[in-house]
Length: 39
Image (cartoon, rainbow, N blue to C red; front, side, top):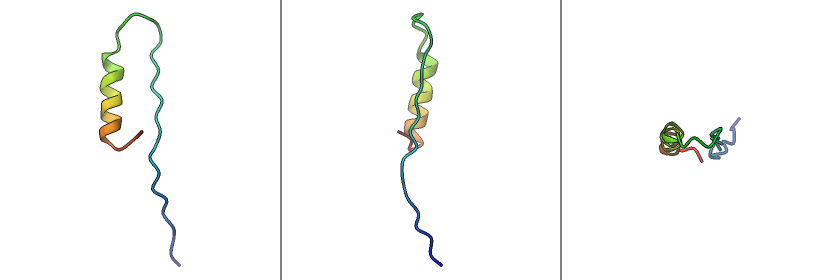
């Protein structure tokens, strides 16, 4: 029996709390997720 494989990209939502401006960690995570093929 053959199985049909769906190739959908995983969607990730990254949120940053507060307005302190410390967003470098979130940006690094977003780039890593994007490079891994996530959306």
